[in-house]
Length: 280
Ligand SMILES: NC(=O)C1=CN([C@@H]2O[C@H](COP(=O)(O)OP(=O)(O)OC[C@H]3O[C@@H](n4cnc5c(N)ncnc54)[C@H](OP(=O)(O)O)[C@@H]3O)[C@@H](O)[C@H]2O)C=CC1
Ligand SMILES: O=C(O)[C@@H]1CCC=N1
Image (cartoon, rainbow, N blue to C red; front, side, top):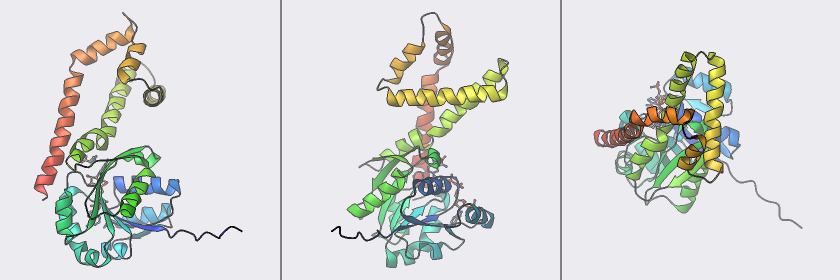
């Protein structure tokens, strides 16, 4: 006879801050139907009303301390510039309840978070991205020494519910991850915007241009992920000698595309380090 399985206790996850990134993670988690109880705290009443309307099962409050009571995981999803103020007000309660903290803030170091939270806290720092909203996110993670194996798994399963995850043993690497995949969606959106404007200049209707560009972006990403071929090889297969692609790529490369991307990613990585230094 089969032994009846006890239903696994859901993980209570509290989001401190209900902005763009927190909402992307919440939607992704709800779509994944993960065994979780979700709570959200944010000072913006309108924001909370919208959350209550769309997701009635999510507890939404303006009271950060109420939200973290009994939580297994507290996701710190506020701007780096106010992280100190927010975490210091959580410190006393956190010293009693000792949840796992998962910070998604760019730059802010584990050492600073731990100090602001009163010390000896289990902290995972991670850098997700907004495609989490459609469960196509990419997240880099780093755990401090206080994080247990089960907490590591809990953090990973939250982020895996919304996309792929990659652990880093060196916290400093998260600055580069921020520049690559945290900010990365914006680079691709900018390319889409630029192509849209250019397509309209060529006389294509806006809606038609949009459809062609979106499908091309999706197709290129899918091909690059699924073919097992390098982007450089795939690019060469599009580029007929003396043809149209060659003419276009010549404009992009002679305009300094590679240098621009190198500079852009360096600027993002430096900004992440600056945010850490300014908020330490
Ligand atoms: N957006 C992105 O693509 C990514 C962002 N991140 C990181 O995520 C974090 C949040 O960014 P993002 O979602 O873009 O920013 P948002 O400004 O959209 O979200 C921050 C939220 O925190 C709220 N807030 C302000 N003060 C408090 C407080 N005292 N207690 C609780 N909540 C508060 C804000 O409310 P109000 O607006 O009323 O001030 C806002 O709703 C940042 O640290 C960022 O570095 C990481 C990866 C990607
Ligand atoms: O722009 C930012 O600072 C945040 C971090 C990565 C994406 N958005």
